[in-house]
Length: 156
Image (cartoon, rainbow, N blue to C red; front, side, top):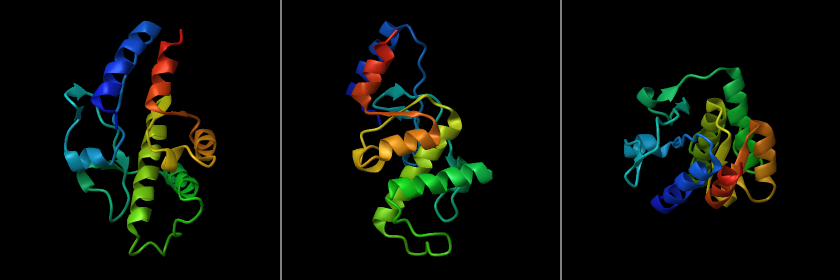
């Protein structure tokens, strides 16, 4: 999630770099919060999550194809360090596994939408222990922390 101070830093950096920038909220929390505004700043249309049985509401998720499902599964393996239960053994997931599933859903939605940068403060889920490199290769995207996004946008 981008907070108000990060939005205030990112917008001038984007303008200084002369690049048109769109910020999109990619979060399963969007459906929980029911809004597209973060701290009073409109973040564009949210990117819908991939429908996951027993997790996604019918009205705010999209059906995917085999490629989308494979991306989600591969992201789950990376994010969980291989500890996520395989298909057929996912009843009664722990709280930690639910968080990992939601992280993978967010990453899959980001990749499916074709965004260039994935900005996150979640080091454990997306950056630490080689996860950044593995996920960047998987999704052909750049994973950055919000301050790094500001720097990238200022480059001409």
